[in-house]
Every structure is written in structure tokens, then in C-alpha cells.
Length: 401
Ligand SMILES: Cc1ncc(COP(=O)(O)O)c(C=O)c1O
Image 1 (cartoon, rainbow, N blue to C red):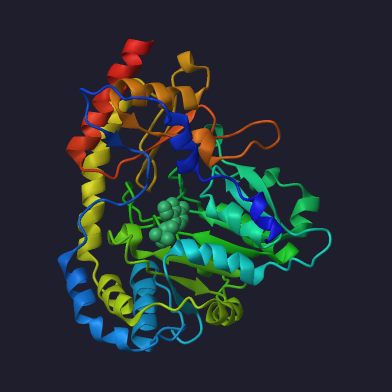
Image 2: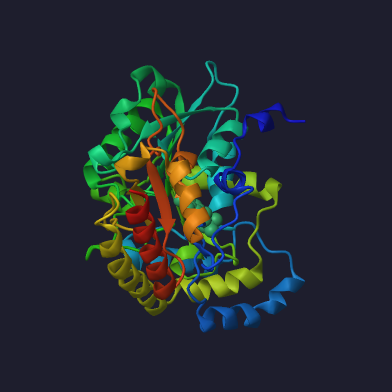
């Protein structure tokens, strides 16, 4: 067996199942889960139609690089969304959802033979794939905290100079899961300068970029690069996905864009790994990337929902409307002494509402776990169900304080 497999951590939902084992939730309440970040709004009919109309593509092996119309759908979207002009032939590549791409990119860019062992820097808390990707690539993960005191900006300055010297890959998650924070231009400038000095690759995970609550759409990594005069996107790859934008988590469709040299190596890796996008999925993806009205409608649904739920929770939890994403990242009341697991377990037992303990989404680093004392609530169900969950949480906190 690959010995690196033993370095993988249990997934947060496996830990949640263990936490809830043996608990029988109060039967008067029907279950409501705010645990899993799986989009639940309806998949637009035109995307399903395009998938059906693309069934003939099942008769052929798809090209790993994707056909030109697909790649042009990516670059045209990048043009409309960020005002960017990328070359469809060399600067974009289809992926089967951003998850596999986040993982595979580490396998492509990390040189495991480096001595001392390479480092992959990840925000903390973070999407657990970053850690697994680093470990299976033979690197050591290093966690940069993102805490409420700094408005959830990742503290890149916390990474020691000797660690930057060993760093080969940095994951950025903007908008962030679970914090919802968007990385501003000065932070990008800092990271690009560090990348120039130390030669690491930046992987910018942007799968929540279309769900935002401010007037201004979140800044993208490639957009930030161009604004800072970095037109070749050196050492930069942005990863995006249709899962949340278009409510198609089952389609497994996204793309990567950026540094043509990395894209070329990534294509080589993916050819051997066998991760080509089916032509049928490509047909639905072209339709989805080419339409914006369903994205506007989806965002409006989240805005209505967050506007209904956030004010209910603000009086009882340390919570506020995020910049973007579909999560509320809340501090539990002081009475719980920072025990997010006990809070989640008791809430489940008494009110049949599932939330994710924040400590499961982060790692202890320098003596503290930046997710401890917080919970993540995914507002993916409809507004009525999320509002019902919020009322139960309010009752729970008022009755347990
Ligand atoms: C931060 C983040 N990145 C990537 C993904 C993967 O999404 P997908 O593979 O559906 O594109 C998720 C899914 O929940 C996520 O939360």
C-alpha cells in the first residue's frame, strides 16, 4: 500500500457521524441539515436539456483537453465575468469538478523528491481536499490561520521565511469555505510577490465566486493578476466549477485557467490519469457557462435566504453576513466554552438540526485550532427550511443558557 494513505485525516462528515452516533434526536422535529455544503436549488431545465441533447457524444472517447467550443465557452465566460482575454488553446482546461482538479494539480506541480520535504500552504480552516492533495503528493501541509480578529483574512505573514523557501504550492480559497471571505487586491499582491521570490504555484479555488452578497462581484485571482500587470499568469492557476454556480453538483464540471506552462503539464498528467470530461457533460457545460440569467436568479435566491436567516441568528450567535459563499460561520455562545462539538451534538439531540463543528474544518497549528468554538451552517435548503432551522437554533440557545 502507498504509505502516504495513512497520513490522510478522516473527512469532517465521518467525524460528524461519529459525534452523533447513539444520539436519538427529539422526534417531534423533522430533521434539517445545515451540515453538508451541497447545492439544493433546482438544476435549470435548459442544462438538463443540453445534457439530453448531448447523449450522442457517449459513443466516442472524449479528448482530455476538451473540444474547442468547450474551451471557448470558458474563455468567453472569463471575458464577460472578469474582462479577461485568455487563449482557449493554451490557457484553459476542462476538469470533472474542482475537487479532483484541486487534488490532481498538487500531484502535477509538487516535486516530492525535493529535500527538505516540500511544503503546501493552506488556509486554516480549509476545504479538506487541499490537505489530502498535499499529503499524497509527498508534501507537508502548513496552515495559515484565518480568524475573526482579522476579519477572516488569511494571515500569510504567519508563515515563517524558512517555510516559504520550501513551499511549492499555496491554496487560496476565495470566496472562502467556511468563512465566506473574499481576498482583496493587496493580499494578492503580497502573495504574488512571495510566489516570485520562492517560485511556488498558487491554486486559487473560486467555486463560490458567483454567490455573493455585496454589490461588487468577488475579485478573481486572474483578474487580480492582470490588474497588477501579470498578464502571463506566471505560477497562477484559478479553478472554478459549475456545481454551485449552476446547481449541478452531480454534473462534475469545472475548468482551470491560467499559466500556460502549468496547463500543459496538467494536461499531460490528466491524459495519463484519464480525467477527460465526457462530451455529454461538455454539451451541458457549454450551455451553462453561456447563460448568466440563471446565475443571477440563483444569487437572488441566496440573498433572500441569507437576509431572512442572518438577522434571526445575530442576537444569539457571533455571526454576520459573509462577503460570499453559502455558509454562515458562527461563533458559539460563551456558555459553551468554545466546545463546538458539544454544541452541535446537543443541538442535534434537542432540535434535530445538523451543523458542522468548526474544529473539524481546521487543524491545530501553533497551539490553537482556528475553527474551534465555531460552527458552519450551509444555507442550501430552501428559505422556509433554513428559517425553521434558525428559529430552532434560537430556541436551543435561549433554553440552554
Ligand atoms: C472550497 C471548495 N472547493 C471545491 C469544492 C468542490 O466542488 P466541485 O468539485 O463540485 O467543483 C467544494 C465543494 O464543496 C468546496 O467547498
